[in-house]
Length: 305
Image (cartoon, rainbow, N blue to C red):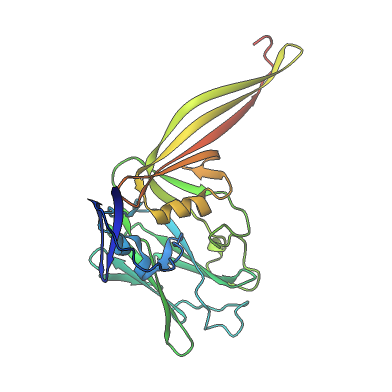
């Protein structure tokens, strides 16, 4: 029979196709649930853990983009975690690395702003960066230390790469408070806070490559005694993300960006209708298309329109 297999050997991953008559099935192992955050354990970063048959993927950015990350590092600095003091530089250390693995900044750099708070259940941190003077490729290492200066955990952002061409857009979900499906917190700190007050609320805005294509326009006319009182125009918009979507981004789109069904794309608000996601053959990446509606209402007093 013809089938697709994944070969796992220590330190080696490969995808291949083959026609066989016998196969030995290895012992079943419990799989770790895929991460759906843009900040993950460093060994789970997509480009570092992808299979050989899967293409590289970099999150796009344009110099000058303001990008915010939220982390849930354990606060070992504050005597009371509900009233955090500055934990950056003590419990949390940032290291900005370029495409050649060279460091170009930390939590004290002028392009970094931070906010630490308490969401009612745990500590959270908002990390905001201004990419105006960033290198072409970059990522952030985030290390969490205890009060004895022992390394507790090491997380990394997914890898970013500058784009120079058109065909990218900024997308952000409209979440006013509470949590999304990935435990990102959007409210204000429920205790004390420290850091830049401007960034007390998390923004999940990111840039993606793709295109917006109008599909259909449906006008709805309301009349009273033959007089048109209002016209509602519903425009159907297709958003196609190019060239593909890896699993972590598919999860992020579902659990974060499209969580509420209401998004802003390049500062225009849309309502989600449906999503189409399909696996690209012989890979572990997806084609991803989302359909939205943009509604405009106009009141009028014209007669016999």
